Image (cartoon, rainbow, N blue to C red; front, side, top):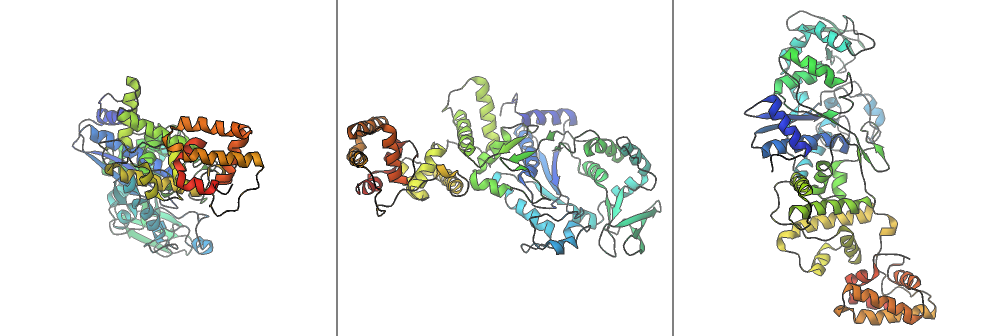
Length: 521
């Protein structure tokens, strides 16, 4: 990796080193509340951190990449895509780790959402160290951090009031309490003894209790204090956040001041924008209208998933497509690959940019050779010709190296998934069965089909261009316009008026598949 890279991940790596100074280990952080299905918008933060982590490591730095599951947050809203909505309503205001998993066999609703992410991240080469905030709070690990916030309560109030239209008063506390009676956070803090004792009232039952911060897991810092407390405790050097957190007076603005109460400074950060799926709008876990990393990996190989983010600045909003844009996205990535391996000549600036994006797009290590170079559109056509049989397609290609097989098979799986689930209807086709009754064609059209059969018999020695010229001659000999001829052939072969470029398509199908269909005419 060239040290003067202008890739945004390298720019932030340089900034971290410059602003935080030399360190034995740099700490980069990310995290989310697993309150619902973790969607691809959430993934943007994870991979943004991973890209900066890689940039730091490429500079020879040691990096700790931590991912915090904020699974001691309150269960505030039942996502619309969850079963047993009425039951889940009874769990509201409890920690999300107290909500049962109603879909699988995980230890909790929160853990199910966590596992869904933890199991798929290695597929795209992301391997963070997971921190579970429920375990940390319930073990009283943060007792000192909570007490510090209580000691500086008025200072925190003053910081928060700087950005509030309705000021907080002296009745506000920097903590919330999950009731030891009901398990919910429907409680009111009544007082603190200046040491370790905190007294609260359960607002549903009216009962009161005094807890020892060193022994209880019921007390939790409010978000705007929790975040900077953890920055200080973990020594976080870099953590991005969504543009909502980075808005004026948002949680990043207040946290960068509150963190000084804990004797630390805010990490280097940037704001990332939202992601949409074409035609679907913003992702929302609470609404249940989400697409996940698993959904993306159904259609895009892992390297392209990484490429989508490595090739886009975090501050840019973009849409992920499952329509015909898939063809262009594969083409763009494969052009990037060709640039890296010197197969596509470009100017010096584009070469440096393309090489760096390709490096950051790889899952675990950079391959020593390019993947098998076949356009995604052509691969899709071959798969449809051979009914989705990857091994038949590979045997037809003939010149695939053993070292390229694994990557090509993965690409085939994604291509077939896309064809069968997301490709536009006019892109899909299947070859007609030779047993299908012939179409009712006029004699000039039948003559053209018979002429085509003769041309197919002789096509092996022809280039695609020569065969294409022969097809036009077949139409002329039959006395029909080329457009009518092509439409007739497509209807005979795939029951559609249009299809892939005909000469290349017929050559890809081969005599053995095409001639039995044409013979019925």
